[in-house]
Image (tube, rainbow, N blue to C red; front, side):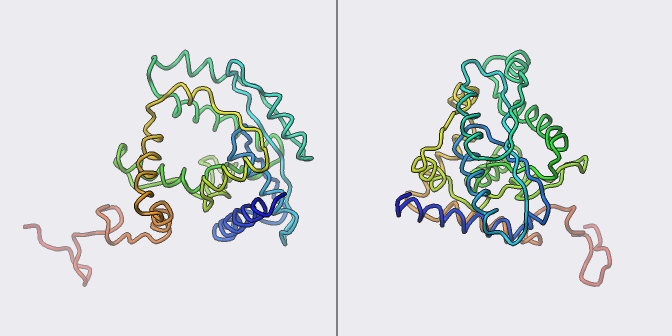
Length: 264
Protein backbone atom coordinates (compact mmCIF):
# COMPACT_ATOMS: atom_id res chain seq x y z
CA UNK A 1 0.00 0.00 0.00
CA UNK A 2 1.45 3.37 -1.02
CA UNK A 3 1.82 6.34 1.32
CA UNK A 4 -1.05 8.15 -0.39
CA UNK A 5 -3.32 5.12 0.00
CA UNK A 6 -2.39 4.74 3.67
CA UNK A 7 -3.21 8.42 4.18
CA UNK A 8 -6.63 7.92 2.58
CA UNK A 9 -7.27 4.84 4.71
CA UNK A 10 -6.42 6.77 7.88
CA UNK A 11 -8.73 9.61 6.85
CA UNK A 12 -11.59 7.20 6.23
CA UNK A 13 -10.85 5.29 9.43
CA UNK A 14 -10.99 8.50 11.46
CA UNK A 15 -14.33 9.54 9.94
CA UNK A 16 -15.79 6.04 10.34
CA UNK A 17 -14.57 5.79 13.93
CA UNK A 18 -16.15 9.13 14.82
CA UNK A 19 -19.49 8.09 13.33
CA UNK A 20 -19.42 4.73 15.13
CA UNK A 21 -18.72 6.48 18.43
CA UNK A 22 -21.16 9.39 17.95
CA UNK A 23 -24.09 7.10 17.23
CA UNK A 24 -23.10 4.05 19.32
CA UNK A 25 -23.24 1.87 16.24
CA UNK A 26 -21.26 -1.15 17.44
CA UNK A 27 -21.32 -2.91 20.80
CA UNK A 28 -19.72 -5.97 22.40
CA UNK A 29 -20.94 -9.20 20.82
CA UNK A 30 -22.59 -7.66 17.77
CA UNK A 31 -22.87 -9.79 14.68
CA UNK A 32 -23.13 -7.39 11.76
CA UNK A 33 -24.44 -8.22 8.30
CA UNK A 34 -22.54 -6.04 5.80
CA UNK A 35 -24.63 -5.50 2.69
CA UNK A 36 -22.25 -5.76 -0.29
CA UNK A 37 -23.75 -4.69 -3.59
CA UNK A 38 -20.55 -4.90 -5.60
CA UNK A 39 -20.16 -1.12 -5.69
CA UNK A 40 -17.28 0.93 -4.33
CA UNK A 41 -19.11 2.11 -1.19
CA UNK A 42 -20.00 -1.29 0.24
CA UNK A 43 -16.59 -2.72 -0.67
CA UNK A 44 -14.81 0.08 1.19
CA UNK A 45 -17.28 -0.29 4.08
CA UNK A 46 -16.44 -3.96 4.52
CA UNK A 47 -12.72 -3.26 4.36
CA UNK A 48 -12.91 -0.44 6.91
CA UNK A 49 -15.05 -2.48 9.31
CA UNK A 50 -12.51 -5.27 9.14
CA UNK A 51 -9.76 -2.77 9.98
CA UNK A 52 -11.87 -1.38 12.82
CA UNK A 53 -12.40 -4.87 14.24
CA UNK A 54 -8.63 -5.34 14.50
CA UNK A 55 -8.22 -2.42 16.92
CA UNK A 56 -11.66 -1.94 18.48
CA UNK A 57 -12.00 -2.32 22.27
CA UNK A 58 -15.11 -4.47 21.73
CA UNK A 59 -15.40 -7.78 19.91
CA UNK A 60 -17.85 -8.09 17.04
CA UNK A 61 -18.40 -10.35 14.02
CA UNK A 62 -18.90 -9.52 10.36
CA UNK A 63 -20.93 -11.44 7.79
CA UNK A 64 -20.79 -10.45 4.13
CA UNK A 65 -24.08 -10.52 2.24
CA UNK A 66 -24.90 -9.96 -1.42
CA UNK A 67 -28.36 -10.01 -2.94
CA UNK A 68 -28.20 -11.22 -6.53
CA UNK A 69 -31.27 -9.53 -8.03
CA UNK A 70 -31.41 -11.16 -11.43
CA UNK A 71 -29.96 -8.28 -13.42
CA UNK A 72 -29.09 -9.65 -16.90
CA UNK A 73 -25.37 -10.15 -17.25
CA UNK A 74 -24.55 -9.13 -13.67
CA UNK A 75 -21.11 -10.61 -12.83
CA UNK A 76 -22.00 -12.10 -9.46
CA UNK A 77 -18.79 -14.12 -9.57
CA UNK A 78 -16.85 -10.85 -9.20
CA UNK A 79 -18.68 -10.00 -5.99
CA UNK A 80 -18.33 -13.55 -4.69
CA UNK A 81 -14.61 -13.49 -5.41
CA UNK A 82 -14.24 -10.28 -3.42
CA UNK A 83 -16.20 -11.65 -0.46
CA UNK A 84 -14.31 -14.93 -0.50
CA UNK A 85 -11.03 -13.02 -0.45
CA UNK A 86 -11.99 -11.09 2.69
CA UNK A 87 -11.78 -14.21 4.84
CA UNK A 88 -15.18 -13.82 6.54
CA UNK A 89 -18.40 -15.84 6.35
CA UNK A 90 -20.68 -14.65 3.58
CA UNK A 91 -23.86 -15.48 1.73
CA UNK A 92 -25.11 -14.74 -1.76
CA UNK A 93 -28.89 -14.86 -1.94
CA UNK A 94 -30.66 -14.97 -5.28
CA UNK A 95 -34.02 -13.22 -5.63
CA UNK A 96 -35.29 -11.96 -9.01
CA UNK A 97 -36.34 -8.46 -7.99
CA UNK A 98 -35.21 -7.15 -11.39
CA UNK A 99 -38.16 -8.82 -13.15
CA UNK A 100 -40.58 -7.59 -10.49
CA UNK A 101 -39.44 -4.00 -10.96
CA UNK A 102 -39.54 -4.23 -14.75
CA UNK A 103 -42.99 -5.88 -14.78
CA UNK A 104 -44.50 -3.52 -12.19
CA UNK A 105 -43.39 -0.09 -13.37
CA UNK A 106 -44.25 1.62 -16.62
CA UNK A 107 -41.37 2.42 -18.99
CA UNK A 108 -39.64 5.64 -18.02
CA UNK A 109 -40.69 5.49 -14.35
CA UNK A 110 -38.00 5.72 -11.69
CA UNK A 111 -37.13 2.25 -10.43
CA UNK A 112 -35.04 3.12 -7.37
CA UNK A 113 -37.87 3.44 -4.85
CA UNK A 114 -39.49 0.06 -5.58
CA UNK A 115 -36.12 -1.66 -5.97
CA UNK A 116 -34.99 -0.29 -2.60
CA UNK A 117 -38.15 -1.48 -0.84
CA UNK A 118 -37.78 -4.97 -2.25
CA UNK A 119 -34.11 -5.15 -1.27
CA UNK A 120 -34.83 -3.83 2.21
CA UNK A 121 -37.48 -6.47 2.86
CA UNK A 122 -35.17 -9.28 1.78
CA UNK A 123 -32.27 -7.82 3.77
CA UNK A 124 -34.38 -7.46 6.92
CA UNK A 125 -35.24 -11.15 6.72
CA UNK A 126 -31.70 -12.26 5.90
CA UNK A 127 -30.09 -10.65 8.95
CA UNK A 128 -31.95 -12.61 11.69
CA UNK A 129 -31.72 -15.78 9.62
CA UNK A 130 -27.93 -15.40 9.61
CA UNK A 131 -27.87 -14.59 13.33
CA UNK A 132 -27.07 -10.91 12.80
CA UNK A 133 -28.49 -8.20 15.06
CA UNK A 134 -27.29 -5.29 12.93
CA UNK A 135 -27.14 -4.40 9.24
CA UNK A 136 -24.38 -2.15 7.93
CA UNK A 137 -25.12 -0.18 4.76
CA UNK A 138 -22.62 1.71 2.60
CA UNK A 139 -24.35 5.08 2.43
CA UNK A 140 -21.88 7.94 2.92
CA UNK A 141 -21.91 11.67 3.63
CA UNK A 142 -22.88 12.63 0.08
CA UNK A 143 -25.81 10.17 0.05
CA UNK A 144 -27.13 11.69 3.27
CA UNK A 145 -26.81 15.26 1.99
CA UNK A 146 -28.42 14.35 -1.36
CA UNK A 147 -31.33 12.71 0.47
CA UNK A 148 -31.88 15.81 2.58
CA UNK A 149 -32.13 17.95 -0.56
CA UNK A 150 -34.35 15.44 -2.36
CA UNK A 151 -36.80 15.48 0.54
CA UNK A 152 -36.62 19.25 0.76
CA UNK A 153 -37.10 19.95 -2.96
CA UNK A 154 -39.41 17.15 -4.06
CA UNK A 155 -41.17 15.66 -1.00
CA UNK A 156 -41.73 18.75 1.12
CA UNK A 157 -40.19 17.12 4.20
CA UNK A 158 -37.12 17.89 6.27
CA UNK A 159 -35.26 14.64 6.76
CA UNK A 160 -32.23 12.67 5.60
CA UNK A 161 -30.80 9.18 6.13
CA UNK A 162 -30.35 8.29 9.82
CA UNK A 163 -26.90 7.09 10.86
CA UNK A 164 -28.57 4.47 13.08
CA UNK A 165 -32.16 3.23 12.90
CA UNK A 166 -34.17 0.46 14.52
CA UNK A 167 -36.53 -1.13 11.99
CA UNK A 168 -40.29 -0.80 12.51
CA UNK A 169 -40.61 -4.45 13.53
CA UNK A 170 -37.74 -4.10 16.02
CA UNK A 171 -35.83 -7.07 14.62
CA UNK A 172 -32.97 -5.14 13.04
CA UNK A 173 -30.79 -2.14 13.70
CA UNK A 174 -29.48 -0.46 10.57
CA UNK A 175 -26.17 1.42 10.81
CA UNK A 176 -24.33 3.61 8.30
CA UNK A 177 -20.70 3.74 9.46
CA UNK A 178 -19.61 5.79 6.41
CA UNK A 179 -21.97 8.64 7.37
CA UNK A 180 -19.07 11.08 7.84
CA UNK A 181 -17.01 9.86 4.86
CA UNK A 182 -16.85 11.85 1.61
CA UNK A 183 -17.65 9.98 -1.60
CA UNK A 184 -14.55 11.30 -3.35
CA UNK A 185 -12.34 9.76 -0.65
CA UNK A 186 -14.20 6.44 -0.86
CA UNK A 187 -13.88 6.38 -4.66
CA UNK A 188 -10.17 7.23 -4.55
CA UNK A 189 -9.48 4.55 -1.95
CA UNK A 190 -11.47 1.89 -3.83
CA UNK A 191 -9.50 2.67 -6.98
CA UNK A 192 -6.17 2.63 -5.16
CA UNK A 193 -7.01 -0.74 -3.58
CA UNK A 194 -8.26 -2.08 -6.92
CA UNK A 195 -11.55 -3.17 -5.41
CA UNK A 196 -13.96 -4.54 -8.04
CA UNK A 197 -16.72 -2.07 -8.84
CA UNK A 198 -19.92 -3.41 -10.41
CA UNK A 199 -22.49 -0.68 -11.16
CA UNK A 200 -26.26 -1.13 -10.85
CA UNK A 201 -27.73 -1.71 -14.30
CA UNK A 202 -31.15 -0.40 -13.32
CA UNK A 203 -29.64 2.88 -12.18
CA UNK A 204 -27.58 3.18 -15.33
CA UNK A 205 -30.73 2.95 -17.41
CA UNK A 206 -32.06 6.16 -15.82
CA UNK A 207 -30.10 9.21 -17.01
CA UNK A 208 -32.33 11.86 -15.41
CA UNK A 209 -32.55 10.74 -11.80
CA UNK A 210 -33.37 13.49 -9.29
CA UNK A 211 -30.62 12.18 -7.00
CA UNK A 212 -28.08 12.62 -9.77
CA UNK A 213 -29.32 16.16 -10.29
CA UNK A 214 -28.72 16.92 -6.59
CA UNK A 215 -25.18 15.65 -6.87
CA UNK A 216 -24.49 17.74 -9.95
CA UNK A 217 -25.93 20.84 -8.28
CA UNK A 218 -23.71 20.36 -5.22
CA UNK A 219 -20.68 19.69 -7.41
CA UNK A 220 -21.28 23.05 -9.06
CA UNK A 221 -21.63 24.81 -5.72
CA UNK A 222 -18.48 23.21 -4.35
CA UNK A 223 -16.44 24.71 -7.17
CA UNK A 224 -17.14 28.08 -5.54
CA UNK A 225 -17.72 26.99 -1.94
CA UNK A 226 -15.64 23.86 -1.23
CA UNK A 227 -17.21 23.11 2.18
CA UNK A 228 -20.86 23.05 1.08
CA UNK A 229 -21.48 19.34 1.65
CA UNK A 230 -19.65 19.31 4.97
CA UNK A 231 -21.62 22.36 6.11
CA UNK A 232 -24.93 20.68 5.21
CA UNK A 233 -23.91 17.55 7.11
CA UNK A 234 -22.99 19.69 10.12
CA UNK A 235 -26.43 21.34 9.94
CA UNK A 236 -28.00 17.91 10.41
CA UNK A 237 -26.17 17.62 13.74
CA UNK A 238 -27.22 21.09 14.95
CA UNK A 239 -31.00 21.32 14.48
CA UNK A 240 -32.78 24.36 15.91
CA UNK A 241 -36.32 23.03 16.15
CA UNK A 242 -37.61 26.31 17.58
CA UNK A 243 -36.74 27.96 14.26
CA UNK A 244 -38.84 25.58 12.17
CA UNK A 245 -42.53 25.79 11.24
CA UNK A 246 -43.69 22.36 12.38
CA UNK A 247 -46.65 22.92 14.71
CA UNK A 248 -46.25 19.38 16.03
CA UNK A 249 -42.99 20.44 17.69
CA UNK A 250 -44.35 23.52 19.46
CA UNK A 251 -47.72 24.81 20.64
CA UNK A 252 -47.53 28.24 19.05
CA UNK A 253 -50.95 29.11 20.49
CA UNK A 254 -49.57 29.34 24.06
CA UNK A 255 -47.69 32.27 25.55
CA UNK A 256 -44.73 32.14 27.94
CA UNK A 257 -47.04 31.53 30.95
CA UNK A 258 -48.56 28.51 29.29
CA UNK A 259 -51.89 30.20 28.57
CA UNK A 260 -53.46 29.87 25.17
CA UNK A 261 -53.32 33.04 23.14
CA UNK A 262 -56.58 34.56 21.89
CA UNK A 263 -57.53 33.93 18.30
CA UNK A 264 -57.48 37.19 16.34
